[in-house]
Image (cartoon, rainbow, N blue to C red; front, side, top):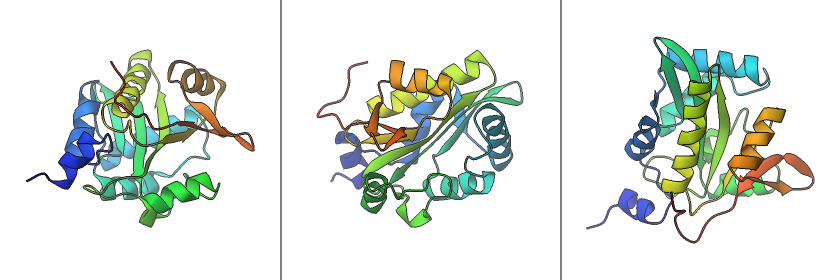
Length: 194
């Protein structure tokens, strides 16, 4: 008998925390503890903007998904972070309508482990070192290519460097001309080749 998580994996829509954490671990990232979430939020606010989700929001989503905030550690210091979460169909509709709040998302829109997600929303990535930042970017690309290729993946650009990486090497496109900071990767009919 095939379980929901196995079906989701076969269809490029995996929501199993173990698989998501496994891909992150391939690049040296680990699931963040509450203290690491606070440190990751602090470096992200310093590098990007204080107008990002709070540590409490990161933690609330992490408690639902068990796989949303990842950190790269050098010694005991957080030097890289990746934040993302899967959304239900209502979350995708909110994104498409321009009504989705990524800074303080409605937790009912967050997909639960084992559910078939409709989309992925990336809070983003940041790093205080090239190694930490690089690990977060590589993990984000691998998650999309290995786990989320059949669903749209959305994020927002916030800095010139972020625009360069996200719309350049990562291949995101502006979703709607009315909001050029909202970018996406459309679903793919088959898994991208590595």
